Image (tube, rainbow, N blue to C red; front, side, top):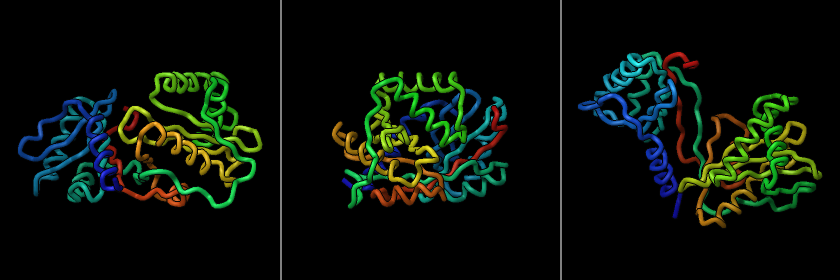
Length: 261
């Protein structure tokens, strides 16, 4: 089992999420669609030769007629590069560029122990609140979020874990909550999300140890691999490479329409 098999499995996994109907692409190609509220997500686009512009035009007209915004995921190396020029001609802009990274098997562990760091699965609602505080601080730059905000999102996360959709982990530094992450359990290739360290505890090895424990436990559940997404240029990419993750593909999300839709 290798990264090519992992990439193929992730691609199929993405296809299975996009099952909604969309515009007719007869004569110009094929694509997958998913509608979330007022946003039409498009992926796995395969235009026929010379039809990329008409292909994007049909999708855009379909969305405009229904007051939908469009989020189009383009995977470099797997889809026609002429799509990029078509996106530009129809007024799309890049919202984000991500790397999909994957690893078969366990992660590479540091040769020296990291002092003061321990990792535990989240087992109580109080620990889930601690993770949510760290997440809000690290991702949202809110060191002092309201209690209501923490409780609401922590409850959602707790319910997801009880349903066994995701499993959460908390990293401790000198016995204080300092970081965490979570992993999907409902899909063939588990995806790692929300890797975060509280700003005062960064660069102390917490995130790496969270990843190592999380992946180890995921493998014991019978999964042979894991994957994750990281923004192009994010310093976290260096951490993931050091743990043994390899880049599978680069993808860009192109946005059309009012992003508030």
